[in-house]
Amino acid sequence: MIVFESVTKRYPGGTVAVDHLDLEAPKGRITVLVGPSGCGKTTSLRMVNRMVEPTSGRVLIDGADTAASPPAALRRGIGYVIQHSGLLPHRTVLDNIATVPLLLGTDRRRARSRAMELLERVGLTPALAKRYPAQLSGGQQQRVGVARALAADPPVMLMDEPFSAVDPVVREQLQNEFLRLQEELGKTIVFVTHDIDEAIKLGDRIAVLRVGGRLAQVASPAELLARPVDAFVAAFVGRDRGYRALGFAAVSSLPFEREETVRLGEALATARDRLNGGWVLVVDAEDRPQGWLSEDGARLAAQETVTEDALNLGGTLATEDGSLRELLDAALSSPSGRGVVTDGEGRLLGSISPSTAVRLIEERSSAPAGAPGTGEEA
Image 1 (cartoon, rainbow, N blue to C red):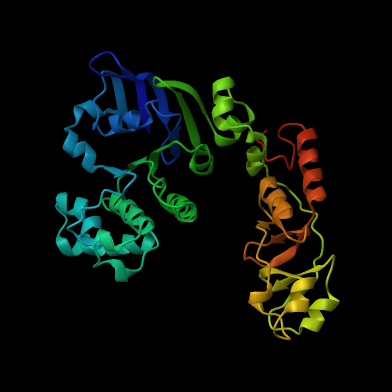
Image 2 (cartoon, helix red, strand yellow; image 1 turned 30 degrees about the vertical axis):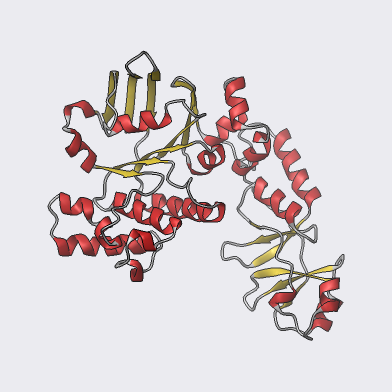
């Protein structure tokens, strides 16, 4: 556990970056610091590894005061990931990852073996091991940065806007990979971001800071969306917080409808016979949805069989154990007006209409807190 006890950082001239911060980051969980520019997020993070020294107060890691450890020794036991990866440009990917284990005295062969394992664990191929940072994409560099932070197997990781410098598609991939890794490793993580959506997706607890470094609210993502403590937090979280709160609302049973399908490679004549409202869902040989075929698409197709190039790929997929937000998004984004629902293996179960999704939301809203299907604890 990381504990901030009345921590203040005041710079010469009187500027206060962090003002009497009291905060706990639970062991094995992700605590996200979020807030507007100038609220002291990064300063707070950097006081954990003493890259910034507190003016007053204490930072404790598992009960030990960080001020009692030499800064270099403290930092070797803490993983640190920054926005632009901070890789050493003159070292290969493998040697970048092995940096901290080598500093700790691990022999080169073991350090490199560990680095190769981590390279694959963060989703990169072994073929990249001998490349230099400049030969990697931004997303690949960030993955290497995460692998390097994990190399010495630190119990604590600090992450300062690690995914903000990449495009939205790569950012989502990195976030998903990060959550997968955390599920496996269970590190104590303090994560800084300015993006409330990223905070809600990644955080077990979210600490919202005001300008001037004062703590406004600490809560789980669901509680923060449902019950912001004041107007500042409500405004920072955003006006669509009610919709985003549906991401934490599970449904106990899903009344999906049976959906007619046609397989890739089947005759277009078969597809035309199965059109429903001008659309038919196309699946592969294992019943995994591939896209929608429209009446116009079936008429204008250059071949006599159903092919991928004739499909409309619009629409997201919902899973049977997903959230109400997933269901509503799938229904609203589908070109046919029917949201596709799959099982845990990605196989088709059926479809759901926007009206059914809205009805489920209404039922949740009217149910007592903690009732089955509300997604809330009693």
